[in-house]
Length: 61
Image (cartoon, rainbow, N blue to C red; front, top):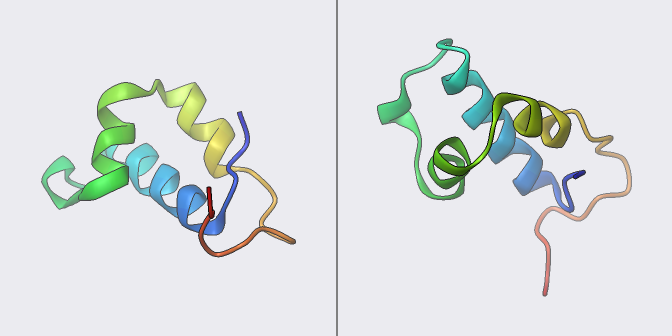
């Protein structure tokens, strides 16, 4: 599942970093904390590696 915005991609990257032990889980906030709790490392990796070009900064629903 690819990221739909740059903000979503950044949050996935932060959550992935915490899953790998590179950053502290306590540093996560908001969407990145939610992603950390609910997604696997492979799902986060897929979302964080999405191409940024052409993505909006934030997704409007």
